[in-house]
Image 1 (cartoon, rainbow, N blue to C red):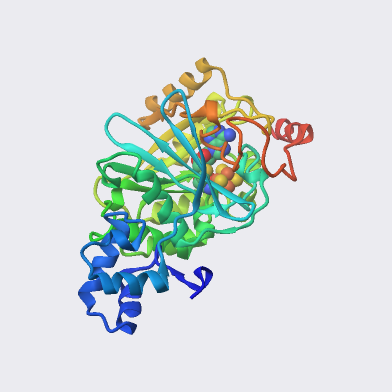
Image 2 (cartoon, rainbow, N blue to C red):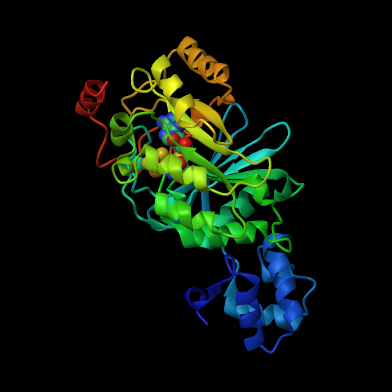
Length: 371
Ligand code: SAH
Ligand code: SF4
């Protein structure tokens, strides 16, 4: 059998593996061994499955692969953050970021090659949207990055905050989520996984009906529809009121909260009036706010506010009893910080795919005219 005809089992559920192994007249417990080998032990070759009989290992090797996306390069930041560049198909690059932290490391993974939302402030949004990642490609990023530390992927948080809009790739993202949370596999608690969305409301409603859900983060980023329409074009479909309404209906377990992310952009969404409106908009919700001073990038003609303004914004929120943390960028020197992921092959150099639609000075004029 040709390598290309073999089925890749990275991304398969235990039920799918059972079906395959039943075709080889294998008992069901073998499927559980294979599943644990792939996801818990993170084995990369069939020879490494030492708990299986040698004849079965040979049979599996003849039919199935254990492929992760090809890791092309790793960029190491001064702060220890690693940006990992993968090629998922010829010319299709994605990135995942390993962020070491004192208590728990964070793995930030991609869900699409590019992104169709085209937010004005985000470099990923400047790329052409190429395709959805498969569940296997999503979960393999966690497996590959989890190996950064000897003591397993279990000690980490996973954030679906890399390239792409996770709710535009709902089925594969949820399959990957179930693989990450399966006790016999990676075994991550659903509380350790955060899905971040720009606000695809129908998909959010679908998510609300799932039996197990990840933590939810909403990229709000503005307090008026006029500004949000320009920053996040899908706001014209589902505006702030519709989005916040869907959040109010989202079922939350005790002590869980929705995170609202708010990228602070100088002169665009950073006034005292914005801070007060934000507190009012979120009134009554169980929430916390993450304030992210914009990460500047040559392709984004916007700037973060001065530090004093960021602190003043935070103070207004806390004065209104809204928990607000300021998120300091990690890995900025190697283009690994929020909104900088574009499959770039240089620490902070040119885009591999030059953006078809760089934000123009006219965009800024339009932005300033709505204020
Ligand atoms: N598409 C999803 C998840 C990926 S983006 C979403 O938009 O939520 C992850 C986070 O990075 C979002 O909260 C987004 O608002 C933020 N972000 C995008 N561009 C940024 C930039 N230039 N500086 C800081 N944060 C940015
Ligand atoms: Fe896509 Fe999120 Fe970037 Fe917007 S911020 S373009 S939704 S990745």
